[in-house]
Length: 524
Image 1 (cartoon, one colour):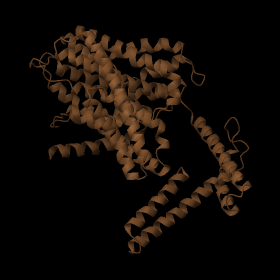
Image 2 (cartoon, helix red, strand yellow; image 1 turned 30 degrees about the vertical axis):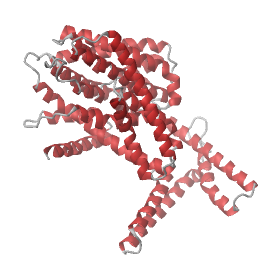
Image 3 (cartoon, helix red, strand yellow; image 1 turned 90 degrees about the vertical axis):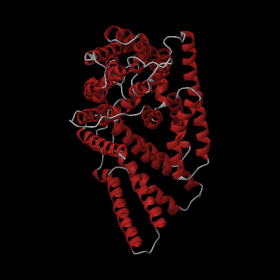
Image 4 (cartoon, helix red, strand yellow; image 1 turned 120 degrees about the horizontal axis):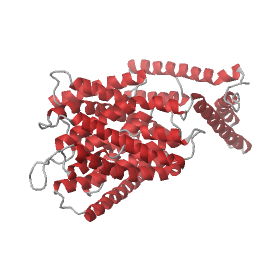
């Protein structure tokens, strides 16, 4: 019962803090970590222990899946070369560098230092996606940092499994076998992820029930993860591959109503899981510090040195790539490289990996250095989320690559005009063929013509010169009138239900239709 109460308190705390972060325009992960750390330092606060499977099985699959579904394959094709270099080369270099420095700075053995390097080698997709949602990054830059975090996590966790095998076996595993295990884990996870995506696509094509569609969408990441783990491959890789494949074809598997529901449900799930998991990171650090063995008092300096190494190595690795990366929106490539470098935060994935380190070796002896690895990992995660997370938005704004609101508005208006013209052309074709009543066609033309009149006011510079005030307000007036009518209809629907003139089933069905129509109007 106490565990349930703790979870509920965490949900309430994380929701309040995340809501405040949105209002104050502060990155939610950074504020959530600070809030969790502050609560953990309160005298009398209970120690928090999170089981590895709680994060690895319950939290990670839906967050990874949601991030992978958002990935644009069109933009990924333009940045696959730097993403490959970062997701493979930088991960291996970071793991090796952290391992060497950890042997020099800490009392960790070489195998455990390699485990620490594998844990910290990659950026975190959950943190990067959460931090990037409110940054006005160009599409290519957003895809680069997001794709890197997705694919390098798969690389680092596969490397982590190899490193843990070396640590628990006390070096009995050969490097040749380790390389074969690396290929098996990554390749097997990709195959299982693609197979799960194919099976889900076949099922969703034959499903029209929104509830069943929602359940399938929620179960898919867990199914891919569990199947891959049962097959002793990478569950993370399987979830990422399944998310990318289904994200590309998702619009063909369901209608607009189901997509609206799936988006709403997943938004809630992702918000709650992200809010709780970042708060847990801050809450766990003091507990882990208290469990350190004697003689580990230098961990803050050790964590700072390792964090500086990770950032410095990322700078050295990314900066030469700026010479071959195409400028974004006319901005110098080195500014793009600065943003990509500073976006490399650590987060949930390293923590989940560190918590899953076995307690004992194969011979039954306690695994040395595990508590120190946990503390160093959590401390570096907290440092990067706070230091880089809070300063990333100002860096993006100063770099000059951030999209201006006028750019977004102009693109939206131009797209609306194209869609309106396409709709009117289709109606004209129907009229020429006498394929529909003229009255129905005239009624269908009204909103398209109003939208087209509004869009015509934009010139090439997007300053709105030449727009007639009457034409510009037509669509706004039309939308407001429809909202007023929908509000009246909703009130009447509630009155009919309250007076027992209709059933609850009818009320829910008609209210859903009204909500769908109101959502289609856009804006507030």
